[in-house]
Image (cartoon, rainbow, N blue to C red; front, side, top):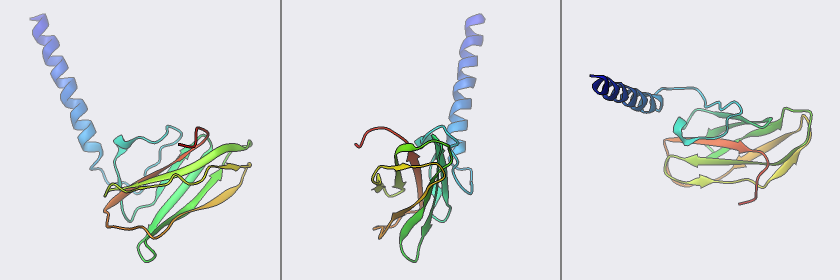
Length: 138
């Protein structure tokens, strides 16, 4: 009896996790906001028309897709009182195209820099992006 309850418990937990994972990607949201937890593909893609916001290590990024120019533009800013080293941005489209990373830059406290991925080729329905602070050039 005890073993049966454990197996049933594991099945319920497993189904709950599957439901949560599959249900999260279909929830509409105006943007993805990964407050300091870093990028993870488990959150899925935004709609093409939705902006993406991401904060990592004190760097705040906001990007939006412009269908007229077929570009993704926005900015990244340093929200800390320290210089952020090697800040860069990457984006990924639903069609598999990866954009970036941008050239790594250092941002002094309060500094904002424009981010631009221009002349995006191919059609896509969704996208996501994230900012990185520190790390290697790869």
